[in-house]
Image 1 (cartoon, one colour):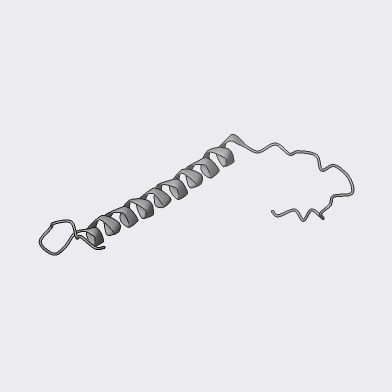
Image 2: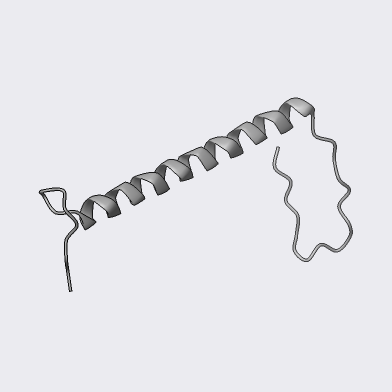
Length: 63
């Protein structure tokens, strides 16, 4: 399924048609990746906010 294309290509490689189902599947996978990145960013933001607060829930006053 993988085509090996030498770089720099000596000649133009013609584009191939991609079935709609494959485009939809790949778009769905891309959205899943974006969702996972957003979850990781949200988790990191929560961790930073938690670290900025003391055990009593008040903001720490570090120098």
